[in-house]
Length: 635
Image (cartoon, rainbow, N blue to C red; front, side, top):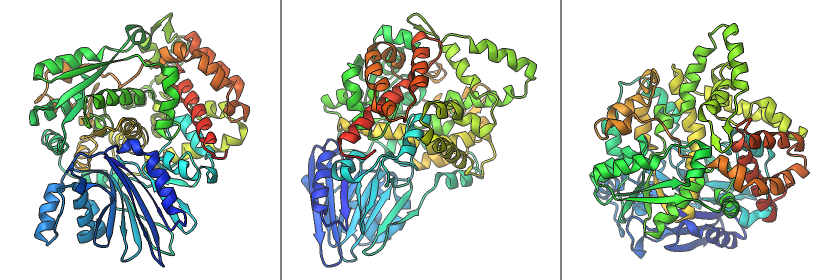
């Protein structure tokens, strides 16, 4: 795992590459460098920061140059040994034992066809001095990030948006529609960027740049196409697929650890990893008892300890009680865009603790909920489709009863009233709208009432984008349609994004064996009825897990990877919310309306409604806005 940055056809390219590479030094503290090539046709500058994991020698440092090719690469290729054998047979020679060199030689041998052969997570840029061409590419599921912006006759690109801002801040402008999208989702989806004119190279795509031409972006892998084809195939052997994926994700020349919450997904990954390599240890988190009480959070550490003890895994426990007032501005900077999910803080603090013990690689169970139907919202949407068929005389009193329920009493959170209120916000909507409303922060009318009138049309645009993505498939069951939408929206836009930024801020690589193209294809061979079986979610994965884990872990109630958000909003951040958010630039500029904002805060503080996530997102967005404006970005 590393960081990359570079320029194509930029007169000040070397300077920009130096600035950007320095700004993402946290992604690669082990080595760094910038390669430049200029002739009468083309100017190319590639910068790299290295976190050495495979082939730790200096020979594998980047930019890697061989013949006319130069490569900067961020990621891991899990099948690089197999590809190396094939390339060697075809006549390729190697001077390192790195996967980086396999990427370079694969492109030399197969060209764009190499991308379909790669199994891993990656974003890379490859320059050819013979042709003057530059290629950018990103892995099939978008695990590794790559931002780019067209500038003059060429482009500027980097692993993180903050690198581009540091180099071009005064030339850039905030994109208001992305802020509206962030308010709706609490993150910025992949098809948008918070800075105008900056793009995220789409997952499963590559871009070709030639002197005198604009970038040509082409798709080589689309999950909706894979899902459609997989749905026509016999059900895959999920047990074998998961075992093989975990084994593949262990390839490294440094020790590998694992996140362990005690939930199903992280327990599967940790136990299978430990069975393949007994050196795999685990990290789990705990919170202050008073924070757990207000959040109504289960004590996951109890289950993590049981798993670790049962399988002889060395478990490191980290109690999180951060100074959230000091930490939040730093977290906002790390995340690149306005992202309102406090789980990013858990990830960063765990990674920092692991890094302090010398850990560079950690496995995560992320992705199973999206692909196998594990989110409560997915089950709730199925329940809502049945609820809609009830007579209106039954539904009306139910709405009234739920509306009056408090979400907390004193310092104790009430989980079930919170869930019931949430359910009623989407229970009577049609399929796509209820799925959207099941996880977004506002209905369109409430969002429009909170923002300034000049942003109102953008709400419709964001809602329409969601509908277009949700309907962009040929799948014939609702569960798999939800799984596909979650993989394209929730997983790509939020979970993979915050995991990359938060872990790399601590110079740690997080690997996600469920977020794998082989696993994704296998997941969509499974009918929706075998993912959610009655009230049992991830049923097919639980069937497989009975081969590895005790029933107590397989069938324990789901607990999200959360944080004591409500305790932070009501206590630690109360003063900051008043001073920074209510008295902030977004309110002063009319982007947020003061009176609806004050009502939202008052309802949360009084325990009438559960608006902690909305307030967290708005506060994060205000801090982000101030930070990028201070970097020279125009409003």
